[in-house]
Length: 118
Image 1 (cartoon, rainbow, N blue to C red):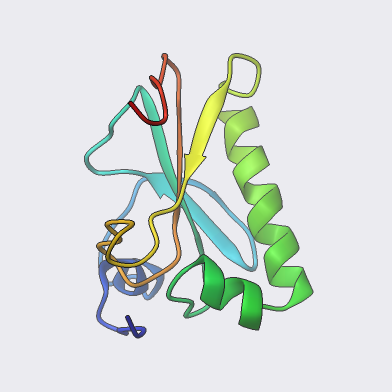
Image 2: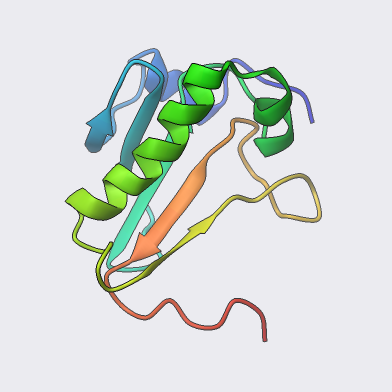
């Protein structure tokens, strides 16, 4: 999968599509998922053009990687799920059911998220 500048997250970053912003810094944006799977369902994306976690790990600067990791923790804190537990998920590639070719982490919580695998 290659990066597509017309993907929905790139369009959100350019301001072409709205989002319900949860938090933002120089390198990352966190916003509510439009089709939440749990009471809290926030997407955290880097502002750079990275297809997935592998691309990000190989090409992102140390500052971008640090900001991304810290934003996930920040989202857990500000949404109130840090104390009760939460799940962070990233779908990568075809077998991982990745739908948007822009790295994004799902931060899920606010209620039991269920078993990881059956």
